[in-house]
Image 1 (cartoon, helix red, strand yellow):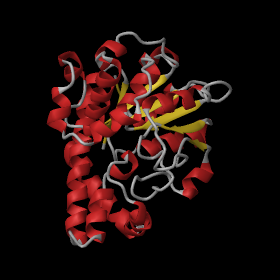
Image 2 (spheres, one colour):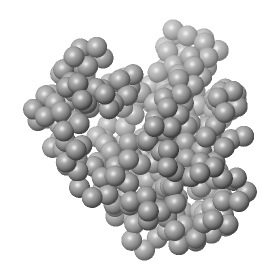
Image 3 (cartoon, helix red, strand yellow):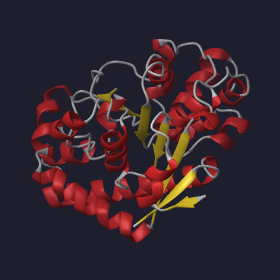
Image 4 (tube, helix red, strand yellow):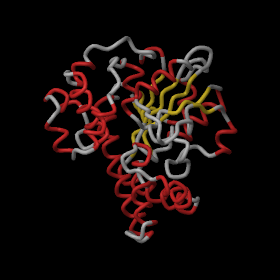
Length: 291
């Protein structure tokens, strides 16, 4: 259902919850802020990297000035060392749905799937199992996952692969089996207005490059340098795109230009995976085309 961005507000009820998904750098946050300013509502983060307090610039989190223009929740509220999963996010969002009009925006597809389709109540992973997973490379992790789960996950995303491996080892059941026995969703699609931004590949790739250049100018190197003394590449927070690359620069292993180019390439690859996910999982959502 393609729609024109300028016509969007005419289709939205000011009381209706809104979901905004799309690849990185596609303009999601700007759209959410426009809706909130013109119609009211609370902007709720659905980006797995933007929950961490240590990052603002490198994850393109809304600026302090943007946050002052409308209420923003679930941004920068988690320490890098804290465990934070889709289940944690869903529980936090569940406490926000009464009494406010949420505008939920981000690029983490699993968050939206859990919100609109439900999430299996999987037991927490024991620390020992997680440590074993941390020590394995991706092929060995994949070898320990059942075939049905392998079909459903992004096998190029190490975090998702390790999560599936941990579930299999800790519970004796595949992640797919757990997902097939899920609780009812907190916010079914028929109770909200779900939007996914379609972005032309070349347009998006150019925006990604320009945005990372702006991040460098805006203090991304200093932001990463502040974390360098406690940097731990095993932490999900410290694997945010751009962080490993700028850490390599700060360690003398890359020039700044090399780090920038590597981060831009990684971001473009991530955006490609996001577009593939959204075409598959969000085909029934309202689509806005960029540019």
